[in-house]
Image (cartoon, rainbow, N blue to C red; front, side):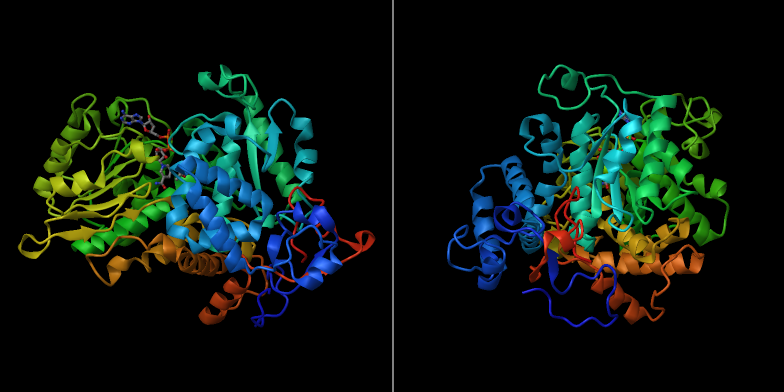
Amino acid sequence: MGSTKPSKFGNLLLSTIGPLDCALTGTAILNSPTFNKGSAFTPSERRDFNLTGLLPANEQSLEHQVERAYQQYLSRSDDLAKNTFLTSLKDQNEVLYFKLLLTHLKEMFSVVYTPTEGDAIQNYSRLFRRPEGCFLDINHPENVEQDLALWGGPDDVDYICVTDGEEILGIGDQGVGGILISGAKLTLASLCAGVHPNRTLPVVIDCGTDNQDLHNDELYLGLHQNRVRGKQYDEFIQTFVEAARKLFPRAYIHFEDFGLRNARRLLELYRPKIACFNDDVQGTGCVTLAAIMAALHASGQKLSNSRMIIFGAGSAGVGIADQVRDAIAAEMNISHEKASQQIWLIDKPGLLTSKIDVSDAQKMYVKDASEWSDNASLLSVVKQVNPNILIGTSTVPGAFTEEIVKAMHENCPRPIIFPLSNPTRLHEAKPADLLRWTNGQALVATGSPFDPVTGPWGKDGKDITIEIAECNNSVVFPGIGLGCILSRAKLLTDRMLVAAVQGVASLSPTLKDPTATLLPDVEEVRTVSVQVAKSVIQAAVEEGVATEKDIPSDEHDLEEWIREQMWNPEYRPLRLVKMEDATRAAKGELGKAMPGL
Ligand SMILES: NC(=O)C1=CN([C@@H]2O[C@H](COP(=O)(O)OP(=O)(O)OC[C@H]3O[C@@H](n4cnc5c(N)ncnc54)[C@H](O)[C@@H]3O)[C@@H](O)[C@H]2O)C=CC1
Ligand SMILES: CC(=O)C(=O)O
Ligand SMILES: [Mg+2]
């Protein structure tokens, strides 16, 4: 049953074809999500692994199992119940879980990710059944190394996703429930980019919570204390990073949903030293720039003439500003300072001017206070600046009002408007409204998925349907991670991020058809990830940060080399090994059982 496709490159470390060593038998194997095949165990496997009598007689294919699981999924009454069903399926049979998701990708993406995963996180302490990652307690730095060591040895982990739960998916401080965002991002890394699920490690750093509702909930599973900040926090993060580097020297570290005070600070501290990535800052910046490039292409506008307003100048907003600023600077061959003059940041106090106390990250975008009234509102800035790009990363629903959008449209025939805040209810505007207010002319992308919008904006007033691109960092982070893992990059450089943007932008449907959606559809995620990984690897080689020796230089070979190392949800034949001869992986002893490499 496992893939029989011959390998062009021989035994690549991460290829997952051929038999899998397993020392578990009987109910132990049925209880292992890595080895379990349920009704798909073959007659000989049933004999060899003591499964006869534990399973009904009829051997079923993976496709049959997908069909059965899908029927069960459909019977769940709402999205949160569907999410819970999928979580327990993942605990039972990982291959089936990922195969089901890949088979119904479009339908299920929003159930395992934003917005429904946000609901699951908010209900974490109520829905909890079993742990699915590594929990690190800020009060016990002395345990960090031993807690991480449960997850394997130096060659066992490729990708760590870590959060401290402070700023989750637009729903704020969720404390220890943040473990689910680490898990969800890693699910997407496997689903979209074929990162081996058993070589990933979700981590939550429980440093308390400032969410009073969680303190008041006696079922809350995390530390009932306020967030630790300052020196103790920084030292704990340092302890975590050092232990992770020591135990898993090849692992790439993805920071997710840290609070505004820490996200960029930690990124800037660790970026020059290790291969790490902040998805909210860099991932969002990359995917948004790719969508902007596509929108400019569709409307015949130029980046060099663009004027962009960002509403909500936090981790995501400033991450986008930086990525766009760098692209303007590169295109026009001007300094970052000069390019930043084309970008206006608005936050709670209004336009960020020299009168306002701003963070280091925001400093470059500050405008001269003498040229602006105090606390200039979004509407007044739109009127004064005449932007062609408006981005929302504020979590303020409805902030892009009809008046603001119409004011923008007055001076810009094809306004580019991206309400990116998640979850769906927090978007700065609904796509249908944006299109209605601009007579179908707005170029729209959103942070969470939205249905297509139909309106009388075709030739002679005919109805046309406009697809809404989902501009979410999920388009790009899996491929960036895959590229870093496969090239064993020492660092993730700016040039590698630019390459990732180009990788996504090259696949925008808008390039072929200016009326098409701005970003590739979710169904294309694997193709997108291969393209992104390829671009990232090539840039890593050029930058001299790739430590993998055997990266093919030929473009086609490189693509095949990448694909061969992507994990696919297919059952591999199992080979029984004796417990005394088995690796820790084959014994299923690690935090997650490892693949039989
Ligand atoms: N589509 C995507 O790929 C991504 C979307 N996001 C979404 O973007 C939003 C922001 O996320 P982060 O940047 O991580 O959070 P953050 O907390 O770092 O930033 C939010 C910013 O909005 C500002 N803000 C709040 N109320 C405001 C108001 N009334 N007027 C102007 N500014 C206001 C805050 O002061 C803060 O600076 C969230 O909804 C998040 O889910 C974040 C990352 C990726
Ligand atoms: C998409 C994402 O990373 C966020 O909303 O935080
Ligand atoms: Mg995030």
